[in-house]
Amino acid sequence: MNTISKKYEFTSETQQVGDHTLYRIRALRDFDNIKIGDLGGFIEKEDNLSHEGNCWVSDDAWVYGDGRVYENAIICDNAIVCGHVYGNAHVCDKSRVYTNACVYENARISYQAWVYNSARVYGHAKLSGSARIHRNAEVYDHAVVSGAAKIYGKVYGNASVGCHTDVYGSVYGNAKISGYFIIKGNVYGNANIKRRSRITLVPINCEVYESDNIVKTVAAAA
Image 1 (cartoon, helix red, strand yellow):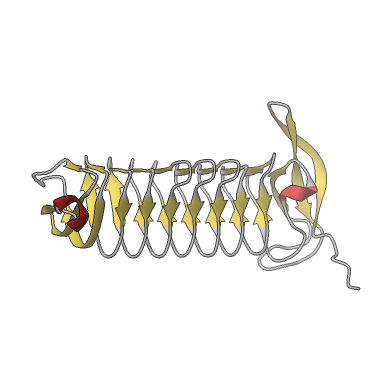
Image 2 (cartoon, helix red, strand yellow; image 1 turned 120 degrees about the horizontal axis):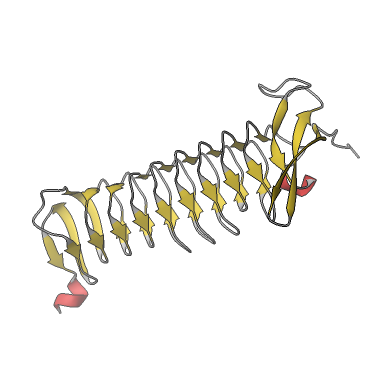
């Protein structure tokens, strides 16, 4: 039976976050781009960061509570993680991953993007700006969410959502949305909804699949 050698230890430098005491870590062995003696970020307990794989918490990032970082995931800069980050995912800058949220595979979370409770971001998805991925929402495949967009539904495929768009339905395919819009139906295909579009709302039971033309779904039209 092979035993896993520890790759970090706790230092005496701490940060207090409410009732949680976090400790800066220091590498005990070389792995990936980390060298023995390198200082990392702050974690509360060993459950927060696996000793296996190349996962790491660096800079002044925090992982605590129910947060778990494993496999080859990287948490850096001033990011805060209380959810699960794994695979080859990166969470950096001032982004946040909340309890029960999952960020995995090759997802990238940056700037001040937040992933709330029970949301999932995976595949090659990218979040930036002050994007907010709300409870139970999903962003995956090669989707990009930026600006001040708020996602309550799903964004996937090669879709791009930005600016102040709120998505309650689904945006997918090659759809691109950037402006002040509320999406309650489906936007997909080659839909392209920009700031100067004549619409501001895609209602439930409606869809946009070409340019910015709204049509009722077959079920709604019947």
